[in-house]
Length: 303
Ligand SMILES: [Zn+2]
Image (cartoon, rainbow, N blue to C red; front, side, top):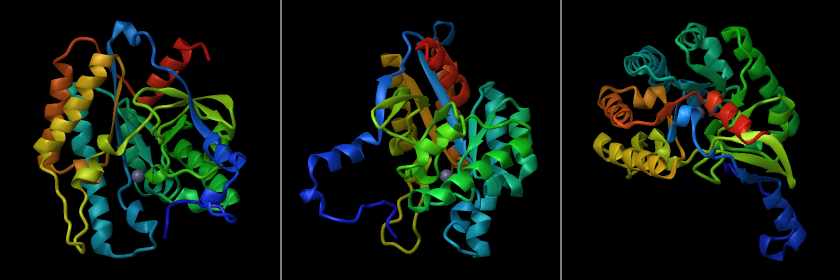
């Protein structure tokens, strides 16, 4: 099944300008929200994020294998506790994006995450492929997910990351209906920007992601394909370090996406420990949750 929503009718090479321009303009990057300086004069902002997918990646496919589900449960049993211990050791905050079904499976985990000063934010209902859902279903799931996280953590989420970073043409509209402060699923920049919908600035902050700054692309594997890539943690450390060093040089944002059931393994968490140690070795670094960064850039830009 394709993740992409396509439109019926003429082939793309037959489209009139209004069609291709309209598609592109539906959701666009607006003005950069990279501030002249970060909080307290910091030169770089660091946003560590963990998508607590756990079993939801299996469930969303309708799969029921206890074997695959156990790989997800590892995220709760070993991943999140190790990550929280590492964050506490370095004294840095992070944001956790949690599908509502996972929050309901592990409410204590979410309360502990919030209790230790981190953020819990939206990551769909069951990690559904929202880009292929009917609009009414996507809207319903988004509202139910927000209610669910609020009930469990005691705090209404202010941001979202769409499952697999997919979006329908309605996703941003729904995010605005929910009154969200930010999204973190789009890729038009390295630094924060304002989302523009149908040519109109929305006030919604985008904290952009990219596969290059995601643990999954380096560490996931498909056991049934000939290609089974497991990148060495040392190689991933090299990439992530260079991304941070570049962000520091430009005065920008370094945003990293990780998954507890992937990064939580011993060899990989040791790599993350070394990365955070490298980052903390520099002066002028602001570690913050996504919410804190979104609020800061919005205030700095006076929107
Ligand atoms: Zn996810």
